[in-house]
Amino acid sequence: MQRAALLDAARALLSEGGTEALTFPALAQRTGLARSSVYEYFRSRAAVVEELCAVDFPVWAAEVETAMAEAETAEGKIEAYVRQQLALVGDRRHRAVVAISAGELDAGAREKIRAAHGGLVAMVVEALGALGHEQPRLAAMLLQGVVDAAVRRIELGAAEDPEQITEAAVSMALSGVGN
Image 1 (cartoon, helix red, strand yellow):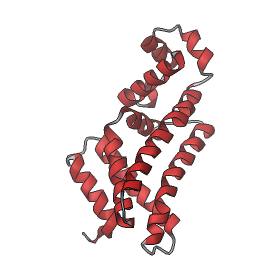
Image 2 (tube, rainbow, N blue to C red):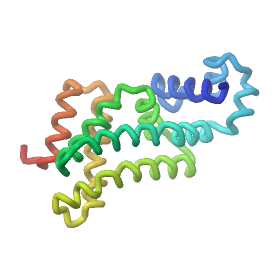
Image 3 (cartoon, rainbow, N blue to C red):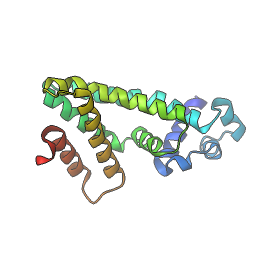
Image 4 (cartoon, rainbow, N blue to C red):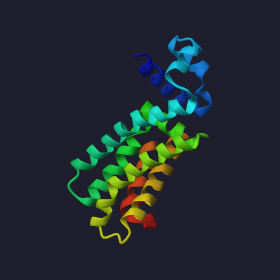
């Protein structure tokens, strides 16, 4: 229960203040534990990040995968892939993942994040192949770049409404930049 409380506190700190806010004293204060007790659960800040990745990325990916499975066409799967990820922007787990991705992390934590993102990209490769892309893996990686840019735009509180950003990202995903 204390480990779960520490992870929940880490999510809150990351979503409120980014990676700089994720400190052991702050975790201790949020959970009511002694700072030394935090070290009993995690050896470093990177270990907290790695645990969050291990716990939160699969849940996030499952939500994207479920949305894609409900679509009947390749285009529908691609649209669901984009829309579901952007719908998760308001979720605290997602905000924590974005903060983690933007932070200065050690090589192990960065690798876990890359692997998790690779899992997301792999979900859409088949749909892109069904649409006739000669290099569906490359197309999937570029599509994820559009999604990541839209996430950052929403997270920054851009002038556009999040729904406008979502619609623009879906349009780019399905029609390219011609629209």
